[in-house]
Image 1 (cartoon, protein in one colour):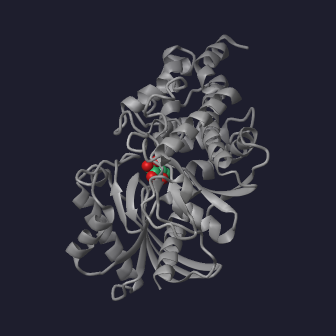
Image 2 (cartoon, rainbow, N blue to C red):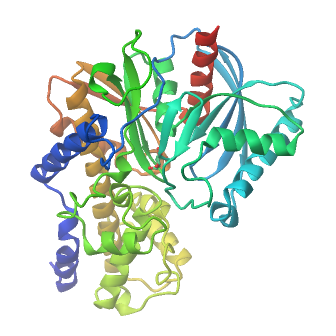
Image 3 (cartoon, helix red, strand yellow):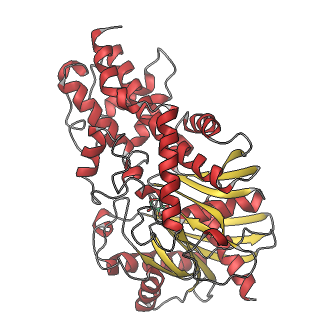
Length: 448
Ligand code: GLC
């Protein structure tokens, strides 16, 4: 082994998590889950375990035309969905949310959403109709019912003032009213994890968990009401409710500090929500590239990478995108085509083969740690719900586009879960859109 490789291994050592460590992570998360569900402890709990008021999975009879809004991923989308049993048809308009709006006022944000909605309905010739609407709003919300959600705090680079502590459905209705040219009938607000669970459950009756590994990370699952001491709704059958865990906040009380590296501390330090969502910051697409970039900077400064010379992009916060990790790890052994393409984009043209190999190793260590942490968290849910077979619906850019994420997860979840509880991972087909429509459809059906 070369001297450089030895130094790299020292820097990357703490990114390798043994099964013992992962089992400890899982035990800690179970404690946090139980705190979040407990009447006594939930106020101070870091993992909030919000009841979603979604009580059942679709039964296949859902029908009709629905609108869905999707805010909280890379883009904002307006969707029009036709459901008819197993069939569905979907029109999808994508709109950008400029940074100025992500960091502006709540009024600007909701005016922008109302404008995009109006524009989409005009395009579809639907301005005269008031279709039931499902709003996928993928941030931590305390729900008071299916159509009321109070934003607890922003995550993932959003920070619009005047929204925290307010009901976002109300803010949406007010913005639509201000604009005046269309009417809406918001019948459900859902988190993207719930949407993912619902859209997978529509096809697969065993689906009880929804997981996102994208810009952020989070999961939801179906819990028995008797375990939800914070439940304020009725106790009629089905005696269950989907719980939005908001596990991104796991570790915010310091319980994961034993495994956070100096790079994790740095990434948190420059983030908009410092000290918050620390688990998410070790895993999700918003941060993984930045963790890797900080390791590259360290290795270059130590003279181990790029002969100690860095480009401006490498020296810029968030200059190295998470999708580059997927690109680099797609290179087969001994081949550096993708890695060199990424390096070109990063402004480095004279990297050696050893530089490329080191980059691949850094990417693999960072993404494998992320996959293993998510796996420990999924295993916690599977071991908690104790079902013989559970389908886990999954979505998100990291899971979808990383070449090995799924395989890593499958293997590690199996190692960390009681062998009596079998599982399968199912890629969701647009949970945020279709799932919101399905929740809306179930809501409409129940009211009827
Ligand atoms: C963040 C949000 C959460 C969402 C997740 C995935 O963690 O707080 O609500 O589900 O990102 O998008």
